[in-house]
Length: 361
Image 1 (cartoon, rainbow, N blue to C red):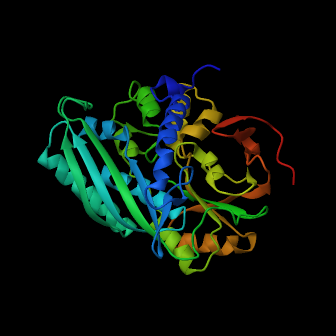
Image 2: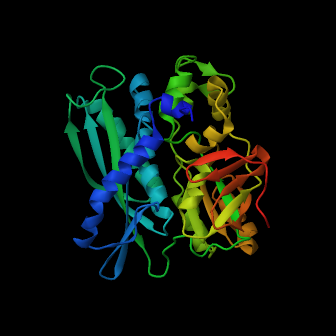
């Protein structure tokens, strides 16, 4: 099979999976040294029990989106991205996000850059209702290179959440016929930027307005990832039965397969992807199957609820000010596939392939 456009841009996900499997093989024995994971590798967040408490833990970073920020000298949104990538994963296991740590590695410690980073991290924390209680900075000039001399930067976060007793969500409660609801993304969020840069920066200037986007390319690409904490809190307050949740990041809608249920999903009501995705798709002549794996394509988070509660859930989400859609339903399928009949796609494992057949009822 020829390499994907994403692999050609510098991100070989198959090789990364092989490397990760080797790492996990070495780390497995550490489960005996402390609290064992109740939910661990493969879920959106690790969950451990400490006395009477279940704690959820995540770690993630902003990635090569930072190269866009470095190029234009703007860091007013990337801290929000760092918070979002972590707290959205905590939500998926039923956790309430509580606190975060940050790690900033830099080529040079620029006070103005750090001020912008601090403000954007604080704004992300405000939106997620978490406290940032500490972190670490490191000047690693010999290890880190950025978009220009002295601008090398990496921003990573670690988040902690609490799972109330009886509220752990692993997806095992999902039943065929349950409704799948998609929550709107805020654009690209933080995934696929190696591909974005390889395709768009050769064709467009970051500071020039693009009519299809209604803004400059820099404004679009630095739009911060959406934080879904207010939406999930509102759904819980309304006593919506959240049977499964998925943060739609890399792997796209195939993230739905990360929950513990012998079901697949028939996707029948996807929204039209925002214009930035059409710009990427056309610039690279990228097949829709690959676009669906690399990007969120307009759906940044998904929940699974009983069909009888779908209308109430959508009403609650509308009250929080976010667009949301009933995009499909769970179907009985031991292979746990994801069908998008309108695009002739079916997802197996970590890729989409071509198939016109819809799942059996």
